[in-house]
Every structure is written in C-alpha cells, then in structure tokens.
Length: 356
Image (cartoon, rainbow, N blue to C red; front, side):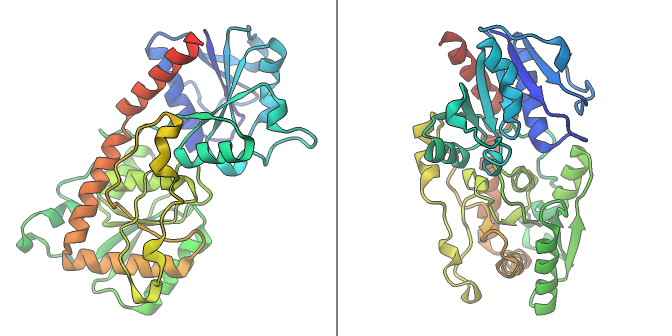
C-alpha cells in the first residue's frame, strides 16, 4: 500500500501542513512507501525527508491510499477516478463544508475520514454519520519544555526565590488579533493586577524562537477560534506557561478547566466540554489526562479573557498552590501528546489500514 499526501498550493507552511508532513515523515522513516504530491507551489520546499512528486507526474492505483485535507475536496478527484482508497484528514471542523462545491456533499464521495482531535471526530460523526480515527499532532518535547531558569519554573523553588517584578503574558496576533487587543485594553484599564503585565508578542517566529519566548512567559493568552486542535496553548503549557484561552471547540481535546469561581465571571468556572472528551474510547483513543491545566473562557469574549488573565496573574504573583498543580498537570498533558505518542498511533493505524 503506497500512501500519497496532497499538499495544497499555499503561500507558506501552515500549522496543518506541518502536521501532514509529520505523518508523512513517520511513515517514510518506518519503511512505508510514502510521498507528498504538490500542485502549482511547493510550500514544503523539500525541507523534509520524504519524496515530493509533482501533481502532473503521479498516478494512483486501486491499492494506494490518497490523503487530502478537508478544505480541498476537489483534490479527491485523482483518487476517485483511480478507485483508490481516499481519506479526508479533517484538521479543522470549520472547513469541512466551506470548500464543498455547490450540489455536492461528502456522503456522495467514496472517502473515509481522519480527525485531528476528539471534538472533530464527534463533529464528523454528528454531521455525516461517519466514524473517523483520531490522529493528533505530535509535540516536540525536546524543544517545547520548561526552562528551569525562567518563567513559572522559578515559582517551584523556595519562597525566597519567588520575587517577581512583572508577569510576562504571551499572545499571538495571527489568532483573532482584535479580540486580543480588546482583552489587553480591558485588563490594563481595570488596573487590578498586583504586578505589572509585560505583553510578549509572538509572530512570524521559528519553532525554537517560539519555544524560547514561551519559556520566559508566565501566562499564554489564547484567542484562537475556530480550532481543530489548537496547538499554541499546548506548546505554551509544555513550556511551563499557564494557558488562559478559549478552545475554538477543538481545544477541548486536551484543555481542562481550572478556573475557580470569580464574582465577575459567575458561571464560567462551570464552562466544561459537552462530555465527549470523556467518551474518547468510542473513537479508538485512550483518554488524555484530566487534571485541570488551563483557565478556559468562551470564544470571542474579550471581557472574560481579560478578567481570567488578571486572575491568573494575581495567583502567580501570590504563589498560589493552584499554579503549581496546573503546571504539573500541564506537563502530564504535554507528555501524553509528544511525537513518540503520535508515532505509535500513526504506525498502529497504518498497520490496520493495510490489513483491511
């Protein structure tokens, strides 16, 4: 069984494209015949150790596996014409229907599905009645890990070493920038943090630079929605920063609510997923850790976001025990989503696909 991954003609490498390349590399290195198929542009720029084939130079057989991202249904055509096995990798539930040509629907296409998270798998099942295996991203734990001399790692030492002068809060302008700026303005206008806030913008950086910035931060303020999985809060968590974030739906896969009752945010401490992450076994995936690891607010709610960041900053400044618990739970979550776990999952799945 040969596996071909369609690489969309993007201007630059996206997070979703990186995940597809991760899957291809895992398979190629394990001895599976694997290739990336590019059309018009090659955003991968042959930077990974996987064969790259031009769209005009490849041909599928019935025994081949043709994997296409959910936002490019027209790219299924070669697989449909060849009678190959077609898989749609749904990396964001919000794009599943957005690119579908008028008059066509997924149920009329001869294709199966993979999902990037449990929430996405449930979305696909609820909307289409189709089961999909869960294939999550893999986090590079050699890169995304706490720096013992920076950020919240210093809080785990003796009380005499916990002398903060400011709270570093990371944010990413590419994720709903206007909402992030509103939250920043609200928090600063309230003026109720016990220590000054230092905003750390992370934009257009290489992975090692992102990790270095996250390691020095105490909080990550996330505004990403919609999301299929939502990698930035997990990267922050792995680096030892407390995520204060919305989920975009997909983030419920690994984010667990730690927000206590706050008078100004009545009811938000009860903001929890609809229960489906506890049913992950229904989709062939063991549950991720359940320990509280983030302060979660509704999507597109800058007021709640500002108040939650304020609350997190004051807990950190006070050395509250909840912070240590969240950091430890965050590390457990990150370990459960490392590259080795992803590799085990992908190779097991491809063995089963080849046996069908």
